[in-house]
Image (cartoon, rainbow, N blue to C red):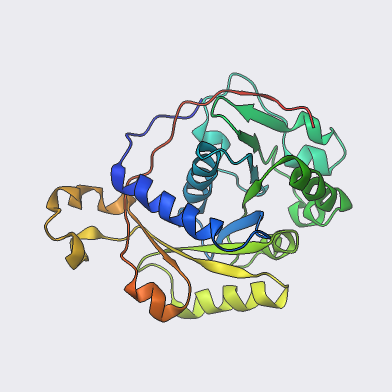
Length: 256
């Protein structure tokens, strides 16, 4: 199960906007990686919500937790058992079909990170990781991948090689321009295609557009703004914000 958080209309609208942008990014965009420069910028929340929204409109979707170093996915689930995960598959301890779990949400499956590994980068460079993507592409319409932060770690660069595009999650007002440029350069050097940016944790109290919606001010620390496309176009887009919401979800193994 997933710990319940009250739903919020604005957040749902923001996720739908993100979903629509990805759908119109091209028919060749099937595997999308979410990352950030630093921890706690909200990439895991955004990736989960997007995966759930893709599944809601009928797209067969699998969420892959590739943060073997410090996953937060499992802490959000009230599991009655300890699921097998990616680290165990990549180290040869189990098969792929043993780590894919179907949820009660139609069309949504999840691959957990698995136990902490002292050598996550080496595991992600295993041939099995590439083979996993090949299999998942045959079984699912979309693969949403959550990865560790990029600053000081190379995991994301390795994962990006297997994905069709990358979305950067940036916490509003917390991350320097130079750090984000460094992350951007690192991804581009490894062939990562940056699709866009999610501006996260926007303080609504400083947004003129939401002035007449003062009742949402108390949700400021949870809010999200989304920007896609060229810089000039992103500035023109209306920022959509909201509080994260998740459902109760059960899991069972999926046969691949």
